[in-house]
Amino acid sequence: NGTYQLPPKEMMHSCPGYDEWEWGLKPGGPLAVSYISNSLSSFHSKQQMIDRYMKRNVIYLAGAKDDTTVTASCEDDEFQGRSRLERSANFYAALNILSGERGESVRHVRLVVDGVGHDHTLMFQSDLGLEAIFGDLFLEEEDYELEVDVEEVEL
Image 1 (cartoon, rainbow, N blue to C red):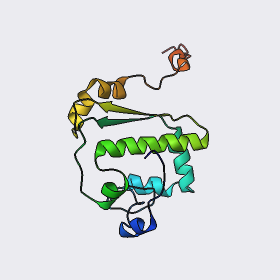
Image 2: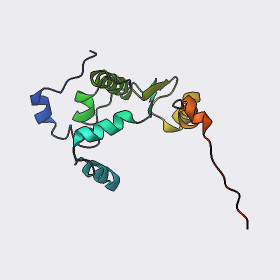
Image 3: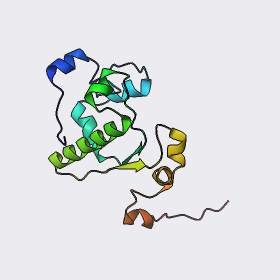
């Protein structure tokens, strides 16, 4: 509905892992990966982590055919949207709302790849996927004018 809100308390209690990694920013969750726990513990606050993330250049790829209803867990089914495509749109909308509340422009880009479902190979081989990997979506004018001083060295 275009608004950003926390789930009702009864939903949060029925799905206690909703704010744990990989769905949220609290430690825990089903994935035991050291870079996740190290990253989560390296910040003094959740806000510090959000601030850093919002300043990063990030590209999200979503498949236009990734619209199958997913019924894997309460975190994605009830909280974020019925399909991966819908969840991608909801997440990106929430980022734009958060950026507006912060008085910043969003530095993230969401690209929807036509004709692709939940298939990473087709996603990365698409024109948009190749642009996301090898393109210059985030280059600014000064990035083209990189000057390097090289001193001549006698051998």
